[in-house]
Length: 115
Length: 157
Image (cartoon, rainbow over all chains, first blue to last red):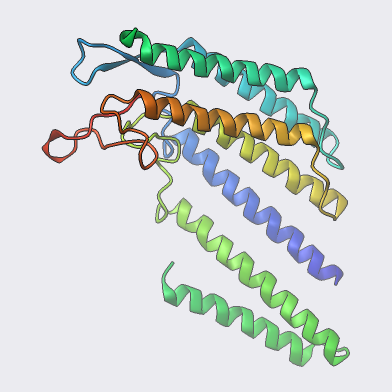
């Protein structure tokens, strides 16, 4: 049974490493497009389709907070892989606040012309 | 996946099971358990490997994984959900490897995933209610931009 567990271990490692490798390779080479990730649409009556794209501060801060929290979490797990790390409530609150800001900004930008 | 590939996977698994059942020493019941366990493990691995290989070879297209339907630009909601899914999935795998058991997931980790998924859902809702043609949310994102006959304006990201 021990060799069975070893086989399962290595199968899991190979599959997960393969999947993550393919995902990151595609993200880095443009196979999964990140074009327009930091651009939001705002209503523009003068535009042909009623919208125009512009750089969004809400998206930029949400991206930074996301990457920081994700990296922190990953480092905690790598440091002590025997249990899930305790995420401070403040960090969850910061993340929620960041996304709330992004969503409010998105909603306001899209409704601005209706007001 | 083509049927022939699936048949090959099943045949390989059955061959492994037969080899174990015939040549591995031990009690018949133990050999039966081992044969089923190895065959199932190898079948699952080969199936998953085929999926990963198909993604790598672009037979399964994930190029629009982060794009909103009908817009063409990447979505922040989808991107952050992808990041957190990968990070927490990887963490789960690492903890299982080290502890050799299914761990209890703390509530704050669930909260983290909940915040992430809720953001994605609310973003879709905002997008649906503010799309120019008023039906952008139907079917998860709206009409195709520049479609045949010029119909279907792009909803916002």
